Length: 426
Image (cartoon, rainbow, N blue to C red):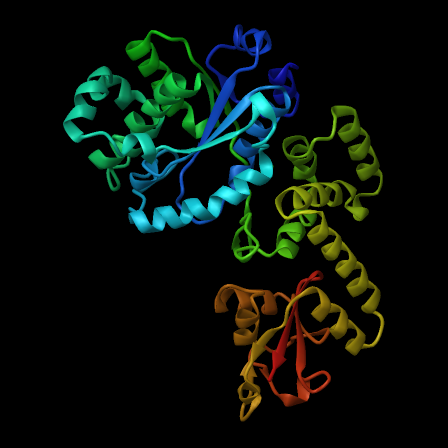
């Protein structure tokens, strides 16, 4: 056992606790069980989930047992916390598919085979699905004072927005999550819940419900939301959300997201997401500040996170590919073409697309995956960040033809200095 609260504190991972004075002592007395919830709104977790995942991981390393709760029931309602409008309701089939996609990602962060501290993965639909409406209102709803619910930030902020408001469905979300804590305490001896700062109201509701129903003392701890130094949410790239599954965000793009992180955010993220000790991070940041152009902090962060999310072999392939591509820049364009195609699987298009007037360079950037939309492609090209076969695109109306082919089949597109995408025409 070691003082996990002290570690979370120096890493900047504590926003609030429900008992600052007693929680550290409580966690040092003996191993405890702690949980965090993940609603299956998509078939993959994303960078925004890393904070809660890493906190659970650190609790386990400190000797406690983590529970990851996948919200098969709460996901059917949608958490209003931090949302300006109601979420779209998902079908049972979609939720089940999303849960299946999230499970292997959770297992990369937590150890499910380490004895008494083994992680547990549960779906709250397994217990919430057994409740009847009247039964839930009678046994759970009667213990929730409406005036207390109305005072929660997640509710009050929505009700203050007259154009959005809140449905009874969303208003009830707090009851479901609160009961999760009671159920986990009763069946798994769970005594601590962790989550983002936007979950404070839901966490305290669960603690209050457990006190009313079971007469037990539970605890809560929140972490800051993952934001950049300018306050904007982190986890978005030019192509959209940064996901933890390779089929939605390729390992290369995941790695490059962290490589491209601003210097102002690199130190914080090293504390958040790596197992480096404080003195190691301090030493690394001193070296980084001496040679910021080498992006030493970002490279360490990208390597450690890619190892964790995708595995060491993928990370080594990315780094070797980047080295080969960089070394090829001043060499023959055909050598660069071979290097890029070894690292990135070429997207295949029909050769007939190059006939006649040819293929619009804007369309090519979208179809290659470098850009999600035509407007994004136009913006990158007009700002001077679009290249075809290492040559900057000067004309937004440029058409690609057979004359652009390398080795009679390949065209290398490039966005910025580091993002390459080969097109193979067959």
